[in-house]
Amino acid sequence: MQANDVRVLKSAAIPTLAVGVVAVVVAQLTVGGAGALGALIGTLLVAVFFSISVVAISYAARVSPQMMAIAAMVSYLVKVIVIMVMLVTFGDTTLWNPQVFAWSVVVCTIVWTGFEVRAFIKTKMLYVDPEATVPGQGDR
Image 1 (cartoon, rainbow, N blue to C red):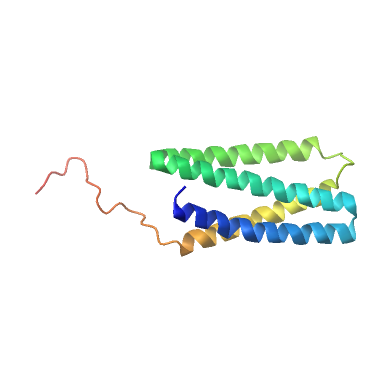
Image 2 (spheres, rainbow, N blue to C red):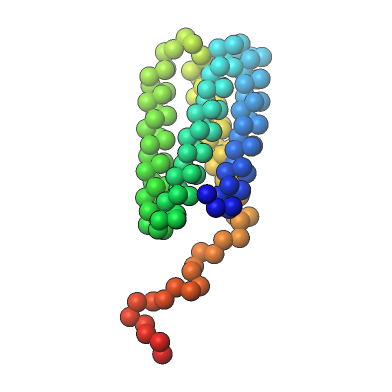
C-alpha cells in the first residue's frame, strides 16, 4: 500500500470505530446486551469490509487504472451483496438486535464514506500523469 492509501484508511477507520464504540454504548444503555452485540457486529462488519476494499483497490491501482476501477466496482458489489445476505439471514436472530445491527451498519457506512471522501479531498494527488505521451502524437 502507498502512503496515501494508508492515510485514507486511517482517516476513515478511526472515526468509524469511534462511532461504533458510541453505538455499542448507546445500544447497551437503551436495548441491552443484544443491542450492544448487534452494534459491535455491525461496526466490525463495516470496518473489515471497507478496509479490505481499500487494500484491494490500492493493490489494483498498482496494476493499472482500469483494474482499479474494476476492483472498486467489484468490491462495492460484494459488500452490498454480503451485507444484504447478512441482513436477510440474521433478520430473525435472537443473538443480537437486528435493528441495532442494521442501523449501526448504516451509520458506520456513512461515517466511513464521509471521512474517506474527506481524506481523498485533502490528499494532494495528480489526476493526470504529466509525463504521459499521447499515441499518434510524435515528437514535433
